[in-house]
Length: 212
Image 1 (cartoon, rainbow, N blue to C red):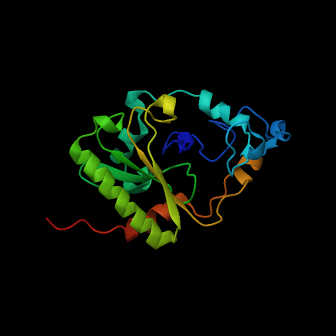
Image 2 (image 1 turned 90 degrees about the horizontal axis):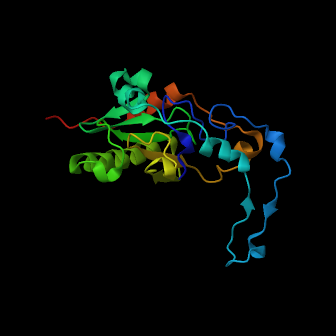
């Protein structure tokens, strides 16, 4: 999954919002972009057609990584849950909403420690990231009645990580028939619920930590 959805506090739109910061292109510039039938390809044909969207290169090639002292995932835990869009805090990792989500309820699971890639995470961090991911799936299913998920990590800037210096896992809820051409054609993503309302609902549904 592409990390065009960069994460809370960075201001990078994952949903086709016109490039990294509102964009240096006009949507009309690509009105004539062709759709190619897979059956016409020289390679083994598949079931997909290709809608070429070269304007997305504005996002892929543009922008810079945040300085380590400005990492949004280091800063978020220092804020209140409401200000940081945090849904749940564990011992080694925490869960927060993506500020510019693919879909309503798009969550990120981050270790508190500033570590770049999954192989550098400790066994305790890996275990808690996995546990928080499972809980997030259950909570999202209960609250939003989603039909499935996209879950993934982008490791390193070359792989599309929007904040490459701090490990984070995406959990994107999906619903049957929720895909459309709105983001591609209009450069817009329709999100039916305010982030603050989504955060409050998910936090309220999050199971309480067991008493020690």
